[in-house]
Length: 257
Image (cartoon, rainbow, N blue to C red; front, side, top):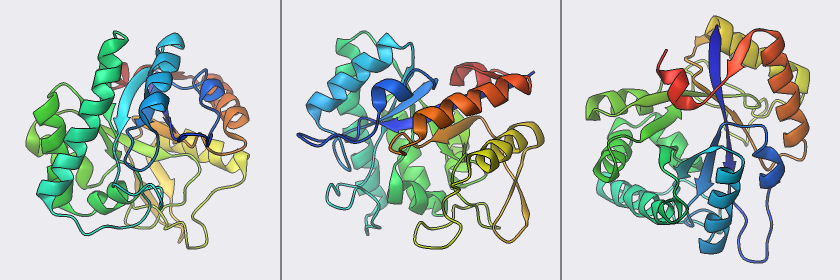
């Protein structure tokens, strides 16, 4: 039987501003990537999100990004590998404090936004992230873009890696995501997104914007929690996966196959 994890980026509210539908989305996913205060989120939101994830039986992971609240972590920054490693360690440690207070063990780390995209194609940056993860806890899983520097960096450093694919994002022929500023970056048709996910899980390929078939390892599928239709899409996707004989399970169970 095919097995896959479903993840979403959560805990991205800040102060008086609410973003996403975390409580509803958590009912349909198996892994939560919690913002750690650099690109989004704050101490109160982090604590609340960990509690919500625990209540729903959802595994918790850190979602570290660049220190860029204004740009939501989506603007490229010129940082050294040492800085990137420190950013990652700092943010994992912050979330780990809240997790420990609630008796929750962190499962994984998934970089956010520009840090994710830059490190996917920059081995030095990817290695810095992997080293930062291992320095805090060598049992944490590095969740990164399938087929990218993320996966290779985790292997070199000696930690587990999970290949992530995206239900609603366009792919380029080299396996990277289409920049949000370009046509084809976002898949808006839910039926198309579901069909793409099923193909990625069952066949191990995704069709790029130029028609190229790109090989992928679909250990976890990302659903964007700030999408207005996130909850309905999550329900639809889970139903489609179940109908196709694909089990939605914990990420650790996926990697144990």
